[in-house]
Amino acid sequence: MPNMSMTKIPMPEQDPKVRNHNFQEVAQGYTAEMAVEEAQRCLNCKHKPCVGGCPVNIRIPEFIAKVAEGDFKAAYEIITDTNALPSISGRVCPQESQCEARCVRGIKGEPVAIGRLERFVADWYREHINEMPQKPKSNGIKVAVVGSGPASLTCASDLARLGYEITMFEAFHTAGGVLVYGIPEFRLPKAIVQNEVDKLAAMGVDVETDMVVGKTYDVDEMFEAGYRAVFIGTGAGLPMFMGIEGETLAGVYSANEYLTRINLMKAYREGYDTPIKKIKKAAIVGGGNVAMDAARCAMRMGAEHVYVVYRRGEEEMPARREEIHHAKEEGIEFLFLNNPTKILGDDKGRVRAMECIKMELGEPDASGRRRPIEVPGSEFELEVDAVIMSLGTSPNPLIRSTTPGLETNKKGCLLVDEQTMATTREGVYAGGDAVTGAATVILAMGAGKKAAASMHQYLKDTYGA
Ligand code: FAD
Ligand code: SF4
Ligand code: SF4
Image 1 (spheres, rainbow, N blue to C red):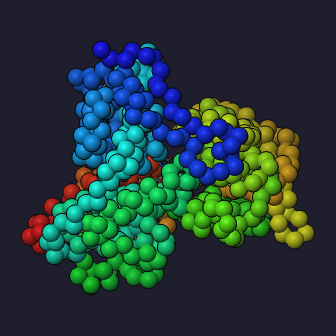
Image 2: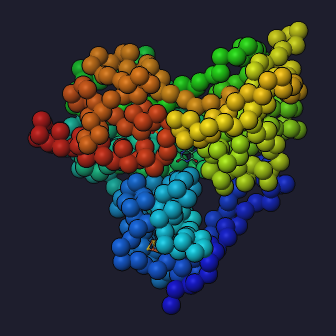
């Protein structure tokens, strides 16, 4: 008999007043009892609508049935058949607009907590078994993977399993991409990402950090060195600014820079003397998940007031509802329908305030959201000592400008054949944010998987792999 409760089993969380001063994980995961009880809410639907909502088509009812039986190892094996990084996607996937949006239990209540169950299974496996994969027998064919975010991790893992000799080239000193330098520790602990990188190393993947492809080494040199194919998963890390007065003042950051300093330079750890401004009052400009992460980090780094300044209303915010809710609980102040007009400095060139103008919503624009319109004469000064711009990112032009034969669209995203992920240069494949612009972890993973399958086909056809 299924559990007909209309609501999900709640996930234990740290108290907001405690967690807004530490970097430990906010959501603490289900216990085995909770997971079994939640799994019993699944109706094991014959037509499986939830599976169609998952970009990597995890066999959701099958794995949930195993959780309900208490066979967590079998559940893990079902999930990892199509998803190599479940402890990551179970934490950061926008489930509410993907698998859970299609769950029939959501019609008259809350959907089954698919993401939480996926996270539980992956964490259970890591804590109880955590078997490192064996190194597969080499087929002697070398493949280069550029970048080490979810697209590259997935592509490298799938190709390594097939026996290819993979070298992964990462610009930063740590592998993991946005999973380590963007998403904060309190949402995705770095040890979890490192465990996935360790699994790649166990399969024989050589991870070369501090390698900026396009500067230290380039794609032509990779082919000359005997790599038969290259995957580009370099993400979209180039931040946008507003182009308003005062953006060069000391104390203005892009969210990417601010988060990278905290995450990669370990400012989140007690006792690390990372060069980062001690902010008293921060304004975060933007309304996406990145803005929420920057705001919540600023609060944890000791800011007394953290404002999110967003030109539309709460309804229009692109950030996940859960993240907005968590941010509000932690004391972040939201200034909806406000837009910065200039940043004001003191006589030492440091931020002292941000001038904003009030907005109102007009007719829907091309994005379908109501267009924000300035209210004349409503300017006011918001006293802050730091401004963190979180307005979106685009792919860095370095790879494109140093690799002959690669074409991009107007936004600088690499052009690929959507079926194969092949770029416009033979032997070079791409996927993730470098192709789509800023998107999601699971889409990047799906693209890495698709690319690995077609690279294998290409290498078989061309080199008899
Ligand atoms: P990335 O993760 O960006 O990795 C690219 C890697 O390539 C980086 O490590 C970079 O250093 C490296 N690189 C770049 N250029 C070079 C070069 N020339 N040579 C060598 N290496 C290079 N998505 C979600 O689904 N859920 C979330 O909750 C979520 N939160 C986010 C929070 C933040 C702060 C940010 C910034 C993004 C968030 N995203 C989230 C989006 C998600 O992280 C990305 O869509 C995803 O990481 C893209 O993966 P990728 O593999 O394409 O690239
Ligand atoms: Fe849902 Fe994401 Fe897991 Fe797919 S990977 S089942 S979309 S949480
Ligand atoms: Fe279970 Fe919901 Fe999927 Fe039906 S739609 S199988 S109830 S998770």
